[in-house]
Amino acid sequence: MAKVTVLGAGSWGTALAKTLAERQHEVRLWARSSELVRSIRTDGENAAYLPGIALPSNVRATDDLAEALEGAVSVYVVVPSHGLREVLTRAVPHLPPQAALISASKGIENESLLLMTQVIEQIVPAGMKSQVCALGGPSFAKEAGLGMPTAVCIASKDQGLAERVQLELMNDRFRVYTTDDLIGVELGGALKNVIAIAVGAADGLGCGLNARAALITRALAEMGRLAIHMGAHPMTLAGLAGLGDLVLTCTGDLSRNRRVGLELARGRTLDEVVGEMRMVAEGVRTAKSAHALATREGVDMPITREVHAALYEGKAPQDAVSSLLSRVPRPERDF
Image 1 (tube, rainbow, N blue to C red):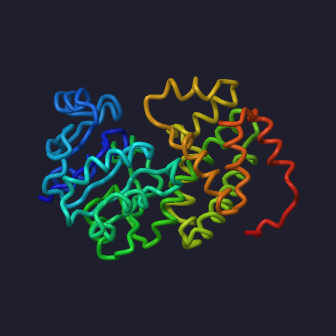
Image 2: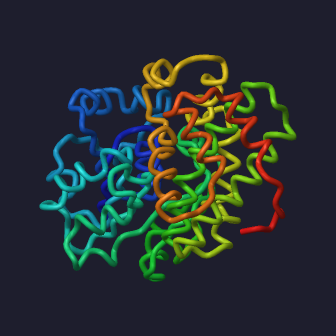
């Protein structure tokens, strides 16, 4: 039985811990909150973030990083993007040198505009940089936790490492594919959250299903523009980490980012919407960093730009939709 660590006991971290435990691994689930750790140990479930889903006995919650990381062959980093740098910096002294480091956090760091694996590579010792991977794909935590069929992908420049993590995670209900496109997987996972806010707002305004389909399709085009510019493979955006995650997050009722857009369209303020959410809607922060990254790189991302305007520049959602519809005509395949 291999020892595996999950850093972050939110809904997705807990679902991954359960999936790994069902593969008969010894799983340490690290949480920042000692109160949450006590609750998980007492109740046998994470009632705060994944209620009603029992955790196997080989999942042990802890708030001690040294205990969590001791002897781990793999470390899944599943903390919100804005907290990843701080948590991993604290974790570095306790990281086993040969451990695989799998980022399952989806975002772009606001200050540095780095992807999550790039943040990890900046923090860990030089010898561990080649052990960094990224997990992506359409995966609501609740459904994965319930054992409903799910397919994801693991990205690594080392094919052998990707295949090792693939076997570590995969079971008959949780299918894992491999890829070497770290940038594509990470950008797909980060940018789809921003687009889900746009689609939620359009739905909330009653724009209809035609508009929803158009937004998702044109969003895929602008995500592809940035990803290809940054060195990703074009087909990655047509796969699980691109189109798959985009469709799920834009249309699924479990999507927190979609809910943000819906509530903004109903006239609520961003502070009101975010203030009542227990779990993080990553698209809110990522809209800021994605807009800044696109601006820095000179890549046209009109949907991202309008989401940024609605969130941070006081633009009304209906005016953002109008701006998209009134853009200068262009060829569809103009990448």
